[in-house]
Image (cartoon, rainbow, N blue to C red; front, side, top):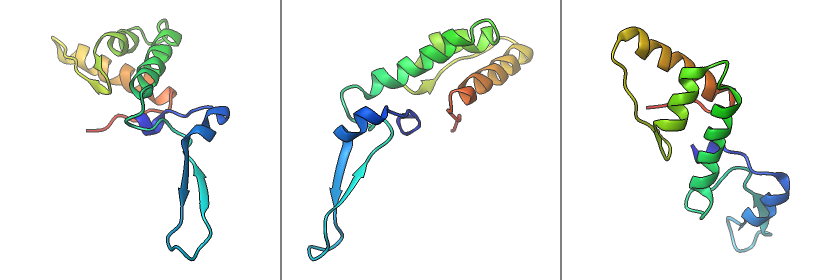
Length: 107
């Protein structure tokens, strides 16, 4: 999930990687454009993005919004339903909501 959260252009300079394959080659500079797992702010940024999505689409996708706000544990969605219809609605709305933010569900 972290690799799907983009960071601003201004902050990318703080995630530079200096690399060379061989000591005889010049050093190349790369800047990471997404949140890096293990950084202090990674979990906060990922969860903040989910909450922003849920709040923006709470009227259009009320079930997906509620599930996103209440049933995520870091980057895992843990939820359930009492009926097949409710479960189908959860899957459809949560998938639509997350897709709007550029997140694809896996697992």
